[in-house]
Image 1 (cartoon, helix red, strand yellow):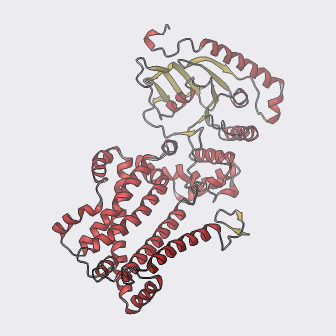
Image 2 (cartoon, rainbow over the protein chains, first blue to last red):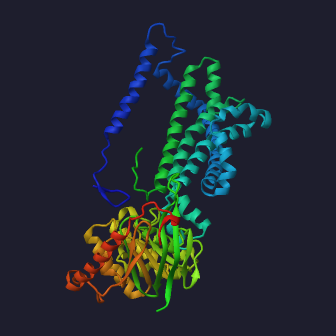
Amino acid sequence: MTQDPDGALLPRRRFLQPSVVVGTLSLCAVVGLYWLVALLPGTHPALVPAPPTIVDTFVEQLRSGDLLVNTAASLERVLIGYLIGASLALVLGALAGWFRWWGWILNPIIDALRPIPALAYIPLVIVWIGIGEPSRIIIIALAVFKPCVVNARAGMQEVAQIYVDAARTLGASRWRVFTTVAVPSAIPYFIAGMRTGVSTGFLALVAAELIAAPSGLGFMIQNAGQYFRTDITIVGIIVIGVLGAFLDQVASRAGRALTAWSDTRREP
Amino acid sequence: MSEKLGVRRLTHRFRIGDAAAPLVVLRDVELSVPRGRFVCIIGESGCGKSTLLRMMAGLLTPSEGQVLHDGVPVRGVNQALGFVFQQDAVFPWLTVERNVEYGPKARGVPKAERDRLVAQWCAAVGLGAFRKAYPKQLSGGMRKRVDLARAYANSPDVLLMDEPFAALDVQTKSTMQEEVLRLWESTQKTVVFVTHDLDEAVFLSDVVVVLASRPGRVHAIIENPLQRPRNEATRVGDAFAAAKRALWSALQSARAAGGAQPHSNPESVPS
């Protein structure tokens, strides 16, 4: 028996949990299906490389250092864009969802931005800012901003009145109610927005790197495609997928640590 | 005895949907809560007793009339009072001790004094061993204790309680009632306690205010003859049964008086 963070005794986690087994099988099935297609007569091995070729390419890319350089460049872009987009969104979303005046000022802007995909700004950003690194970061920040701001605002609007009344009768000022009641109780919504932001950020990353980027995973994919190096493109796609899933896990774990007090269901 | 809280000609109405006539929730309520007494407000559900209590706290503003605290009209939330809600109002994101500390911290009480208050009140409600626990790890009864400790640690001038134990099981409820009596006896703070439970009102109160409904108004004010100190044995005594019977009759006559004018507006009500 082991102890969980709440101090309750739980049966020891088995290594072969059903969820892990089924999940692995399902992934294998997808790879197997792809492999079958690659082996079909008439399929060109350069256009649909079989899994062993992809593994070879991965190793080769690792050895040459290209993969690391590109991954580092992309990660840096995503992190900077993410930090800017998410922090702006959380602050503005929280204010808009809580204070009447801030809502009047910000809600029309948020709601107008909502239906516009971040990628639609690319031509504008290029014309206004140019094709350098700042443009790519701005596009990623915009893509992260949207889900974060919408969720943060929704979270603040869902704060239970009972906690607000309790804090007010206990002597809290309006600002104190905002910082010590509204924001903490909306944290689960903040986390949800930030997790969505991870995936929209990666989405925008690839698009942003199509703008004459000198390096990055998006650049690598695009560049390889032009030379019919499908194997490199696939390696790039897989690395993006794994990185995205990893960062989502980081966000989810950080979120769980921050909301340890919540008695809601833990696994989505 | 001097008046701690006063309610003067308080009337409240609100519109439900787009009904032509507003619903009169409370009409011409007059009430005087003397310093240091334990006052229960009782009435059938929907008589406006919770609304009245929320107005006494300043959480709601009446359509007409006013609430006086030490003779001064209350405007906005009265932060000198403590309020214990029917629902679970303990902050789930704070530990027990942080919950208890919340009021003093909001008022700028220095750290050393806050620590002393937290220790004192956690111990007073029997939660000394659970100071670092989060509310989700506690039972409903224990969370109510946190709520009580949080209200008392803030040294409120008056405590308003809105059916605080309605959601608890019978056993826990009677333990909590004794707890409240003990706290009241040791602090001598004025308490206004809303309930629909006759036993609870008889066991706790000095005075019981009986409300009639539709519109909510004061029907009777009854002095509780039951002697203090009271304990578990008090509940099975003849005096308790007699006091309960008297209160029951008052409630019956309030019931007969109420409900004559459902959805009336003040103009059409004969007074």
